[in-house]
Length: 510
Image (cartoon, rainbow, N blue to C red; front, side):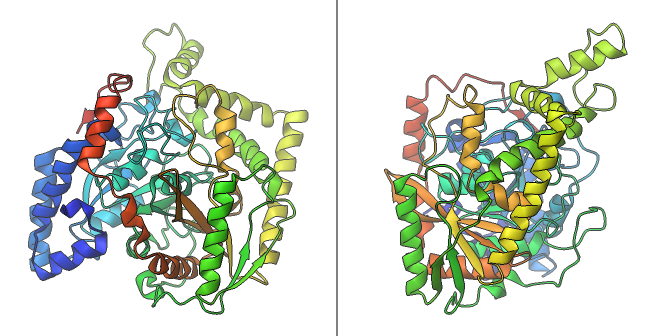
């Protein structure tokens, strides 16, 4: 068993017992990246090996002096829309292909303070607009569990963790990308309450919807990472000062006896695959056996959640992406005769199809007339959905729901069916609209593909969500281990992937 196959907490115990060194752990993961990255294509940038190993040696010395953070020596990855000082941050777009931030995002700074080892930046759809990584300007990421299926919107980060190329990863979640990718790749994925984790240094297309979240192999790891990144940040105007919670301690022994859980499965406005429905029923039965009180619930306006999300996200995108004009930073067209032509050519050449479509749609939504009417209606629906969920949380502690309406779609069909693919966020978009915390955890396997179940809680109820998820995970007996990848499987994928390996641009090494 390679070191890369272990969890964060297992590695921490080994480092504490001095049975392995930080350098040994880091070298093992770097070797793993060299072995399988040609198949997963999880990273856009991989940091220089020698610099990474120098950092590992420095952390090892601090561990010996007992002067380190709680995640010391753990190799990790950040999605490439999270700013990193001195390291290119592209957002998966040609527009920012050569952008090198002069500062670290707050979450990156906190992880560095914890003495994590940054391995690189992971792939995503350009500016997070998409659900498959096929809108990346560089290349699509392969789902390491099934190369014929998409890995979801946070696919690069999820693929890196699932394939053993990082012990955990941070990514952004605008409509459910983290939870969707966790479900597709057999991981635990958490989107925290809006305001719990700083968004300072996150480049996003929809500021009121996006939150930085976590992808890990199990619930304990998720709690440990949340401990490291949660907390008030004065640089983020939407950050909320809350009571400090020790999330690993909140797991307790995984007791959910007496917790009231509402089962939500058929209010989404579209049909849920019977395989997904079966997984939800199995999860509900498991929670009931653990002592939770289970009851079916309804959210009256839930079917309008995704349409409202699409309208608001598009409107915000037209504004947020409008800053990229070819003057201050980012891509700059060299063939413009005047300032107006510079704007036009820069955006025409720098943005991809998805970004352009989103900006045009958003521009329409912010115009007078029918567009503005739809935008205002979406805002009212957002407020109504908040009321619906708040009423439910008066009687229930948690909501159990599907993560996705079906199994992960096949690849290479996503660009032509962009809006249809976006329907995969049907079950997750509402939590982003309202800002609620939500977590995906594997609950079943269908056709060799993992299926996730979603736990949604009230504002700042991450501790309760993690406690319930941990109880479920313990009952499953380390469910995530069933999804760990192996070199032989990924090497076989490379041989069968002849139509995909040569596409896209070469990865930039930092």
